[in-house]
Image (tube, rainbow, N blue to C red; front, side, top):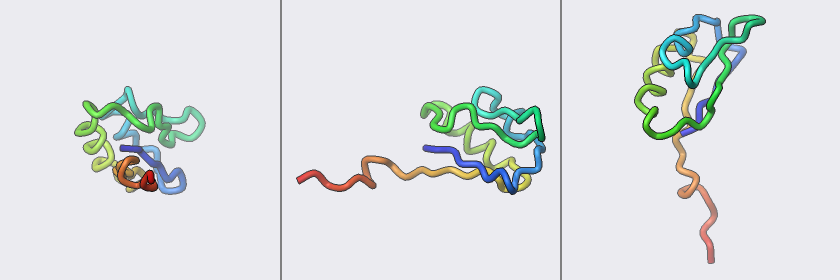
Length: 75
């Protein structure tokens, strides 16, 4: 799982940072999201999904593509 942020959409509400401060923070300049751990450990997956859902602007998204599935087959 990889977290992606659209800084153009971010309104700086801070719900992500309040929900999961070990993964998200806010910029001191404009309050937009800063992703501290773009590929957090699996044990945080449920909390990450919740933080993404709580984002009021929809600036956060998840890429759940498994790297092994998208890799070219080895012959």
